[in-house]
Image (tube, rainbow, N blue to C red; front, side):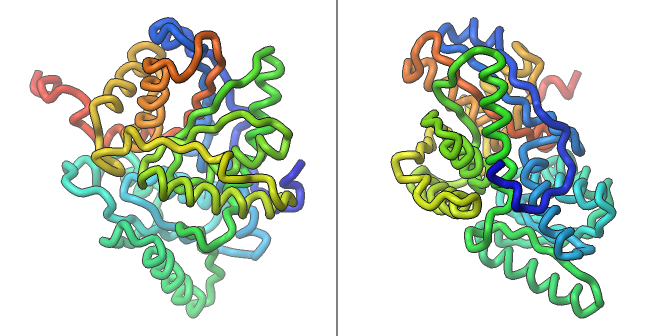
Length: 341
């Protein structure tokens, strides 16, 4: 395996299933829509971050760390799962919650992921400057310095692009798992669609697929920044990952495919196609999508099918990266009349 030289903690229940969305495929009347259920990775309501944290926490344990530090938005799935992973491994954990989304109702700050973070007993810090990744990281390292002065051994999982993306290695592994499942199910993949935010999952999966010799298009749906900026981020991170696993010129600009058609009105904000996608998957398949990541990714996939950019009978895989706890922070997803019955 390409990642054998890296330390890894055991956190995820793998492999996650790959299944055909039979009802959605029939309704859209085009390609076969498959779903890779990385919302079912088994730790604290699951999600893609579990695969990533296996490598971050493996690295932390190799450094004899006793306290984990990380940062993310109020409804961060990464923060929730970092706390869960630390608790599972017997480590202390401190998290920083960033105010990235404005105009939200009280439920956004009290339900879903922040509720679970509090339940698991993490020490929480707050940062009002949610669009400053370097500033958020700097605050984490300041906290780490204070912990060191108290005799602790902190390990920081940073947010910005200036550090090695150990978490991406989890999706280098996932590429092999996914392709093996496709072989067992006897179909060839025509495209993979996933939400692309930090780009750790996107970059890791892309590098894994290419390292295995496949040129499958991988579409990253922009959830935080416009396509031009996201493409630069994915390319930078993918090249970092490629070097980590021993491939110098694995990724070129032509490998990067991002789409920001569902980004507006911004990170963590709903739009009509995203609401439709959330409703459709819930009511047709019993699968829960979230408003920030997977809802927008599925909305983009649906639009690509409806505009015939995917052909009939092609096999399209949707990577479900989790995030369902965030649904509880968006009560407006349901008609207000529901709550007045």
